[in-house]
Image (cartoon, rainbow, N blue to C red):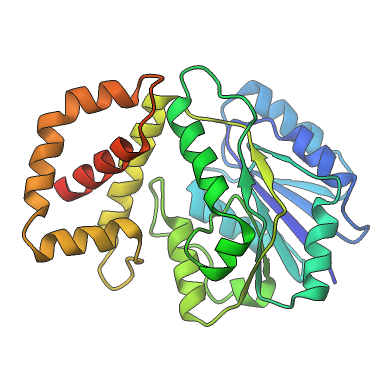
Length: 290
């Protein structure tokens, strides 16, 4: 069995992550980091260092490819029977991280393995919304819950997939903006009848967005979801609630209420007093407005 670890990166120094992985991977494994046209001098120097490491390669396209295309190009360059995608802005949470995945392959045969994600222990100042959102999600999304709802909560942050399962789908390259390339990938894999095994094999997310940046990325993600054609748009909690509101002709009322309350809603969500219920209302109102 061969393993390829693929790490797409943009303006992020992932040297520490690569070092930690090199201490755990088998001799026949490879690590390929994708420098997606980074502009940060610190990140560029880090890529040069990684390129000189044993079992490592750095892929540098001539233009910024974006989240879907860079992952597909890394996959095309890889050789492993198994491919492990890891986000660059993360940290391994266990000295047995790779061993846990390899053990799962032996004991729980499946096409896809998902390890999950944890938050940093302390919340960075000004980043309360995303930090709290992810903290509450990690409490709920135990491996048992995820296994009961296998395709509902997977992201690209930390998952391993059999090569012949990924090759028939890949990431949809029509998605150029931020968000939902992962939702669509896993929806396609579910339609193809691929199997998933969930385990507690977390990585720690390090790059926590500020409140304002997280709201901006949330809006962009919702625009991406809304822009997908009906025949490929995946079912999400947001699309299902929106469908019900449309059925009872309430979506316009939600959109107008969102606009009316937007100044105070945004002020609260950008403060240190986090309300996840208000955040859900904000997302729903914005999506109805689209």
